[in-house]
Length: 204
Image (cartoon, rainbow, N blue to C red; front, top):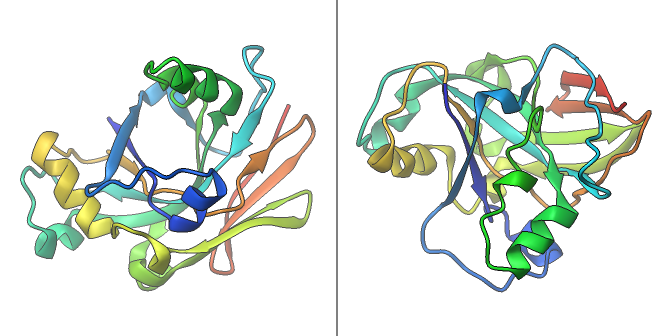
């Protein structure tokens, strides 16, 4: 099972992070299966970072084997969606970027991919127009809509499948909008697609 994630996919987040880089194609990075955190299990703050950030995203689960998938057929390759958190050790990421080094250690560490409960995409509504948001301790901290994606889910799937064979159960994090921020011990995170709460866990 592979976890793909997309960077720079919302202009609002790019502006928030003061990024001037513009990509003509989706920016793809990966996480190992050891990054998955699900079932409401707590996220334990690691000792290697002093600045752990949440990034709330629509997450898609691949349901068919595919390679070189045309964008017009990509919708056939996923049936379930949820909301997830791409945890980022922002201080480590900054240090690695300043040195021009890969920054997987800031994105792909254990439990860095929190997953909510998957639901059928029909239940979620139009994948290209889904509201999602994150509450921390009962307060709204981040919200977005997939209509604001620079690259749609189908375009992302088509692009990734040029390089990687997609298999049943592969996971795709589709990018985060503006509003990312830190988490702290005892924070209570609740993630929603529309009005459906699909993610609920605490920081330890």
